[in-house]
Length: 205
Ligand code: SF4
Image 1 (cartoon, rainbow, N blue to C red):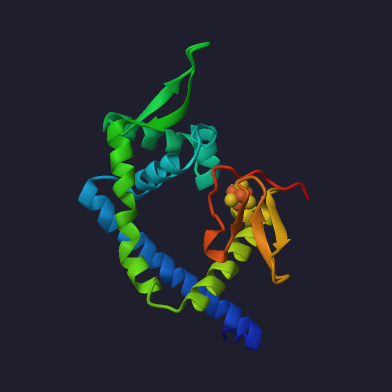
Image 2: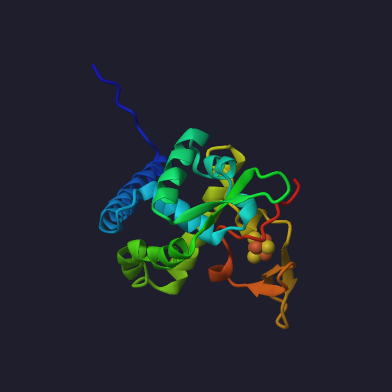
């Protein structure tokens, strides 16, 4: 006889959140595949182009991308070689010893990367229909979930403001505490908190 698992109210909610995230990720995968077919790139090639265009050279080596996307170096290397053959990326050669290091976009790759956000625009059209308070609450929840997953090594190398050493709290003229970036010297509203900041520097625990 199969065992019946009884969840309490909180566990039911948690389980429903996990299932809902899984359903949304299905939409994410479908959109990425469909868009990739149109432009003749695989989903991972699209994600690499977006990553390289959004990060400094330091984070664009094969080993860094393998860590970020939780893939083997061989898998990343194969995808990069394919992008190289398509003329979209190039390896940067060290002037000192001739070794090849980070990967940069070619002119064609940059132009392609500038249009790649089109793949998620159908999802954006739905998200923007919700009130800003709901979207902000969801964003904060997701940022905190990402940080929790990162602490437990289920996610790697996500550079969010929440774990950056430059994040500070400052009082405004009405004595309200607001987030502030000490490096860029700007206040950070919820919508300005970053997920993959090129200036991220991990806070020491
Ligand atoms: S440097 Fe980037 S990640 Fe760090 S607090 Fe400023 S905006 Fe956020």
